[in-house]
Amino acid sequence: MQALAKTCFRFALRTGQNSFMSINGFIIGLIPVLTSLLISVIYYKRLQPSWLRLFTWFLLLTILISVVGYVYSFDFKSGNHFIFNIYLLIQFLFYFAFFYKTFQTKKLKRFTLLMSTCFLVYLLISFIFLNGFHTFNSLGFTIGSVLTILFCLLYFGSLFNAEGFINYFKIPMFWIATGILFFFVGNFIYLSFLNYILENNLDNGGNIYEFIIITLNLLLYCFFSIGFLSNQTWKKRT
Amino acid sequence: MEKKDLIFAIVFTTIVLLLLVAFLLFFFIRYRFKNNTYIKEKEAMKKFFEKTLLQSQIEVQEATLAGIGKELHDNIGQLLSSTKMFLGITQRNLPESPETLNIAEETLGKAINELRALSKSLDKDWLEQFDFIQNLQMEAQRINEAKYLQIFFSHPEKLFLKADEQIILFRIVQEAIQNAIKHAQAKNIRINLSKTSEIVRVDVVDDGIGFNNSIHTDGLGMRNMKHRTKLLGGSITWNSIGVGTSVKIELPFKENEQ
Image (tube, rainbow over all chains, first blue to last red; front, side):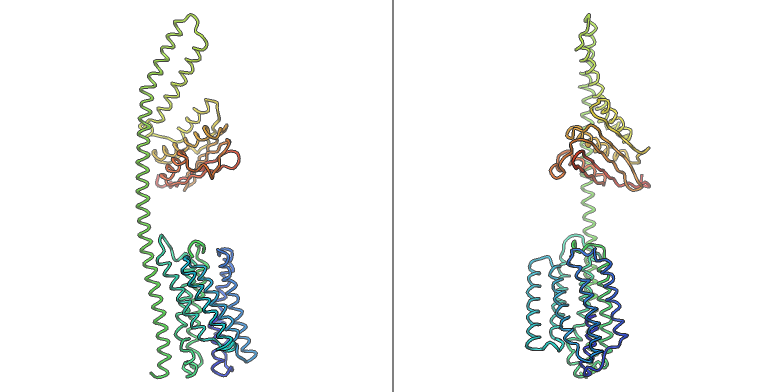
């Protein structure tokens, strides 16, 4: 969803903030995240330990920011990058905290904490001294994506090495990490070349990215929903 | 590379990367499935081994008990019978038999009857036609006659379990009764046997002094009961809050397989 909304800012960026994502595309992108939010609300009390319930609030925030970002651009005909810069910070720190809680070994926990701190410091420096707060921090997004992919792989690695009988399909975290991995891997290449694509107007109208991002959003929130519906408690197998 | 080719390359690489992730996850899941199957087989073998081991232990125990029963009947029983006979002769030779001698003769008679009942309950051949309900009724009657405590036994008409399973269940309940008599100082014991289409359940509830669940968990008697229940593939739980103790035994039961 955050990337769907970023499409808005991208069009604004390219066309001097006069062109916006279609309302239909926006609504289509909103359906999976709303469904996922609804399921997480229904199963809210079953999510254990309690910090995992923050996921519901995170999804709610995602929807709010996407709507606010869209409306802001549409109504004020001005850049909404600062909204997505805030979201970028919240989103990655949420995912990192999520992986921190999930990892079982101290080594991985320390590594996650170190990387998260470095990322936060970089983002703050970038907002204050380099990039500014009103231009979307593309490099920050790329670094955040790389770190998230790395944490996903580390999580799958720890699952791979885990001993005993494990049914992945009953572990909510497995589905969530799968969704996150697909989403960020799918986004990574396009966003790495984003500036070049925008400068040379390669994706005219943003149709290709719109298609990519709607597909990835659908995948992401489908996996999240399956995760909420899987019947084993989070505590046992995270 | 032309500019329009670049966007194609980006899309193509994205698709390739996504497929790569999908393949990786597929092999990852497949590996775990194989691993899970291996673990399941290993656990099944371990369970089978444990069951065989427990079965052997029970068989050895039953054989030992049968031996003891035979010895009690053939040796001690004979000695007691001879003693009773000599007492009878003595009584007849005396002009007036003293009261203490009469009581001794009566007590000895009771002891012989108890011994016969005990040796019968330890006899393996007899146990092969074993009926849990009938034997527990006899056991309850035997204990009730002593008037030390009362056993109330409620049960369905018939228990469709194999004879060897009924013996094991009987030994578990016997141990529970012994515990209630020896340790709990109970005055009443209620035994309830019930069954559904999937479970056979026995509840042994006494009104004794109870025990501390967290301390008394590993006595020999309780270990034996756990072992025997495990052998039957069931579960056993003790519950003692304040006054009294309840023992719940649940065994899996498939009506069609019996």
